[in-house]
Length: 571
Image (cartoon, rainbow, N blue to C red; front, side, top):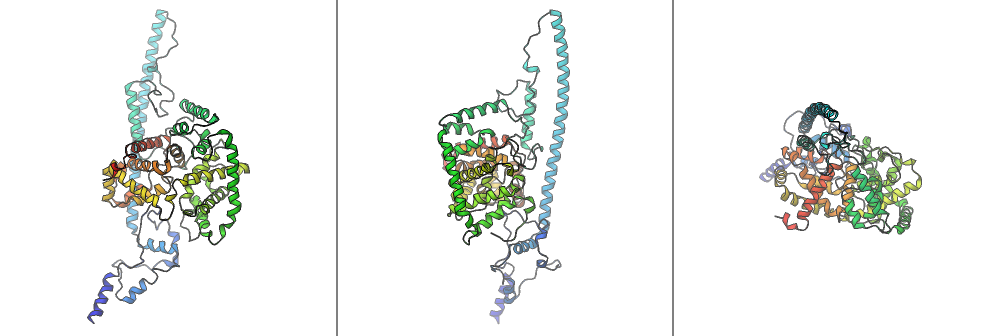
C-alpha cells in the first residue's frame, strides 16, 4: 500500500508538466501568437467550456495522466488545432499590456517629433524673415552707394548672401558640395540632421507601401550633378570592349544608377562575361538552357517525390497578398512561400509574376538536392526580378502590370533572375543545407563580434535572456530582406555584389552594424518581450539610400578592424 501511495503522490506531484504540452517559443520566424488577431482560426468545436478562476485541476491518478497525454504524439494533429491550444494558454493580459506599452511609446515618440518639427519650422521662418529684411537693407545701401559713385554693377554675386535652392532639400554629402554660409546656418542644419537621425520614426516622405525607386528620405531630386557624373562613368566603363571588373566593383560600391544596374549586376554576379562581344551569345544560350529545364522538369512538380517541395513554394508565393496573411491549413513548400513574398507590393500579387516565381524556385530546388527548397529562398528572387523589370520600363514598378510586357521580355527577365539567384546561392548554400550550419556559424560569429564592439548591448541581451538565434536567424536566412524596404535591399545588394564574398562574409558585419544602430532603443527595453518585439519590428520603413550608406560605411569599418584579425573578437 505504501508503494501504491508513493506512486500516486509521484503522478500527482509531476502531472503539471506533461510531455507534448505546448511551450511558447518566440523565434525569428514566429512572433508571439495573438489570439485576438487570429480569433477566427480557433475552431468553435475546439474551444473549452468557460472555467472559473482558480488552480488548474491536476491529474491524481495514472489513468487521468494517461488520458491527458494520450494525444501528445498523434501524427494526425492539425496545425491549426495546436496553435489554438497554444492560444488558450497564452496570457492575454501580458499580450495586451505589451501591445499597449508599444502603442504608448510610439505615440510619445510621434508627439515629440511633431513638437520638434513645429519648433524647427517656426525658427526657420523667423530666421528667413530676418535674413530677408537684412538683405533688403543691404541692397538699398549698395544701390545708393553705386548711384553715388557711378560704378558699373559687377556680375559677381557673393556666395555668403545667397544660398543654394537645394540646400534645405538635400543632405550635403561632402565639403565641396556644401554652399558657403554662416557658421550659425551650418550649426542649425547639423543639429536638425542629428535630430532626424536620432528619431526612430521619420516623416512619411516615402509611402508605407514600399517604394522601389532610388530616392533618399530627405527628398533629394531624382538626378543631381554628382549622380549624372557617376552615371557617365558607368556608361564609359561598360562601353569598352572588355569591362574592367575590378574598376566596376570600386565604382559600384557606393551604389549603382538605376539605368545601368541590370547589366552591372549581371557582370558582377558572373552571369555575363567581361568581353562585350560574347555577351549576347551567352545570354541566348543561358536563357535557352533555363527553359530547357522547364520543359524537362516542371511537369514533374506533382510527382510524389516533388509534390511536397512544390506545395511549399505554392503556399509561400500567394501569401504575398495581405488578405492571405493568415495561418494556413497544412498543405505542400514553394507553393506556400510565393504568396509570402513582399505582401505589401502589388507587383507580386499578379498571377503571372507568381507563376514565374514558382518556376524559378522549383527548378532551382530540384537542381540542388543537397538543400532543396527552404523557406526564405523565395525572398532572394525579388531584387533580381525587380531590377531586371526596370530594364524594360521607365515608370515605377510597384503597380506595373507585367502582362503589358512582350512575352520575350518576360521570358528574359525570368531566366536572368534564375541564373543570378543561382550564382548568389552558390556562395551561401550551406545556409540552406540540413540543419543550416552556415547560418548557425554566422549567428555565433555575430554574437562574438557584438560582444567586442558594444559590450553594453551584449550584456543587456544576456540579462533578459535574448538569444541571438531568436532574431538574427532571419537576418541571415533572408539577408535582412524582412528588416528593410525592398528599395534599401536593392541598394544594399549593389555593395554586396561589389564586395568580395559580399553575401557570405560582408553581410556579417552589416548585421553587426545594423544591431548596434539600435543600441539606444535596445537599452531602453527592460524585458524579454519588449526586446523581441523591437528586434522583429525595427522601424526602417522610411529608410532610404542615406541610411543604407551610413550602415554600409560602419560595416566596412568593422570589417577593416576585425576581418583579418578574427582572434580580436574572441574572448
